Image (cartoon, rainbow, N blue to C red; front, top):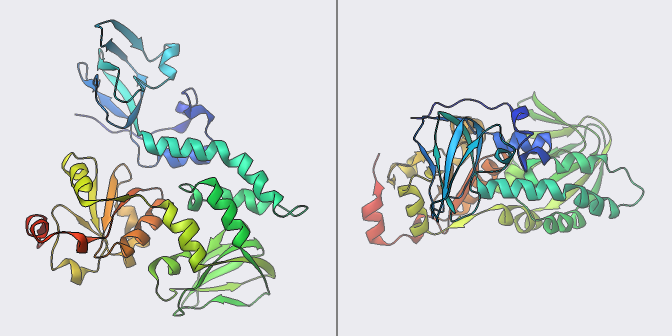
Length: 354
């Protein structure tokens, strides 16, 4: 049995390629991660397996055996231990703990996304700055640190910037009003905006930050007011461009058969984002239930070391929920088409009343 321990990111600077990541990206990668303490004799990875994990040895000694039966030992203090254990998929070696060991196990796809984004940021920032020659690009640098973009191809971000519409604003101007239907989201190029609800200040937003995306995701009325507390310049993004360039490319869709395989193998967890009244009519067996409307407030209840497959009736609400959770650092997929795509036999077999 493993004993989880929290991670100090400073311990990882000597590992390849983790040491090349910026502090922000490394913090994002480590969210929900825990050090695994394994006893001697534990098989860490198996020859021929495709487990989708990248594993680093933090302490202890392991025994590594390849397909030809050749064996060698690896100590966490060896130079070779700076690299992942048997990194190929399928695995070319079996790795077993000779002594008690500590390891760190990442989802390989998540690690690849973080590496690709981190290594392309400088080039991307230059490309975006070229779209506005001679202007202050500090706000771009701040904006690119946002998790809003972590899952997007760089080409989408460049195209998104091309479609932003400048909107000069004045102090005291209401940009969003609670109860209004959402049509745009905004990026702050200059100025400060205040988020209010029932007269209470919830947040102050500065240049390089954004607001209004949640209303576009839930396709419903705004849940707060946003008022400028200084003169400034906003960049407005239409809902159609938001859906095309931000929302859709950031989502990973999965069919029901594939999703069930991942659930049964213990690689993912169902997450039902429908209303409680809808959930009373039946949920997928073993699903966690967290309605979309409560997601931002209650998402902290979800462990970050798990992958979630989200579903609703049609896939629209689960897509919105997956986007929100992705920004918060969760690993998510969406059941394509939602529950309405299930056959009658699948409904009878997998839906339960809880």
